[in-house]
Image (cartoon, protein in one colour):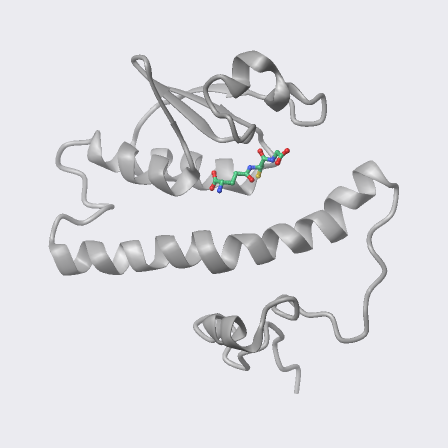
Length: 159
Ligand SMILES: N[C@@H](CCC(=O)N[C@@H](CS)C(=O)NCC(=O)O)C(=O)O
């Protein structure tokens, strides 16, 4: 199986970490995002979103990191990482969906503003006094952060 990825991509990393846990060896192919290789027509043909990671398995192409994680587990008979019991699997799925819908977009925002901007613009975004990880979410969505940020607003209490 071949994984088109980028070493700095956290979406790619969750796939490589899953493969490692499963003891699966993947052929890793770097898609140079800085050179725009993810927008090449040959790549877009397999992932019209123009994003990594992309898995290729014997002519089958799969994009979306969480779907790839599930697929890798399903390709390993006897694996225990992704449970077969309905409730145990539902619990894992719960966190996969939470990661895809709530966690990753917010972390991506921080990464773009604080890290990637340094590459593209030469400096990170100015820090807004009230900025926190969930400040761009509506109050309803902000509540979704309570599993990891008990304060419910994306900030950790320091005192
Ligand atoms: N929901 C997708 C997100 C993939 C994604 O955003 N990948 C980033 C790298 S971490 C990318 O390829 N960005 C290139 C771009 O958006 O131009 C997944 O989970 O695989």
